[in-house]
Length: 125
Image 1 (tube, helix red, strand yellow):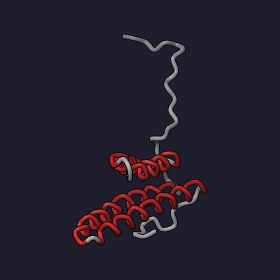
Image 2 (cartoon, one colour):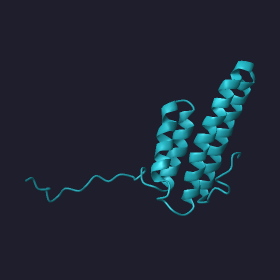
Image 3 (cartoon, one colour):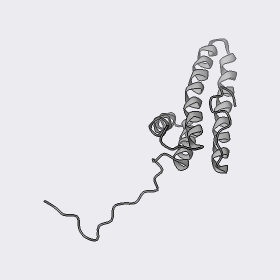
Image 4 (cartoon, one colour):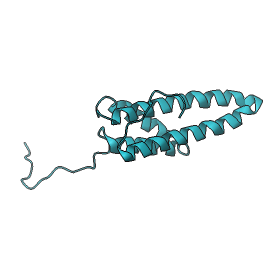
């Protein structure tokens, strides 16, 4: 049996994967990066689902907001994609991207102030 050396200290992390404000901030950034690097948005939604219900307090509203932002944005993007056949989808896709960015910025600002999202179940902004 091997023993742990007496001067061994476990590696310290900044706990960005643990539920809380830092994790929420990472998810917002992953979402925004997802507009350029698609896979990061998927990583963000997985983190949001893993930590929802564990943080408590005002942070929970952010997890709800993040999860809904992902799924509603995906729905809007799919509808826009289908409507690209009649050209209006290109305009709508741009509007979806703006909507998505605005929701992430609103969330980041509220998080920075230590405030909950006022209406996390909203479909709009």
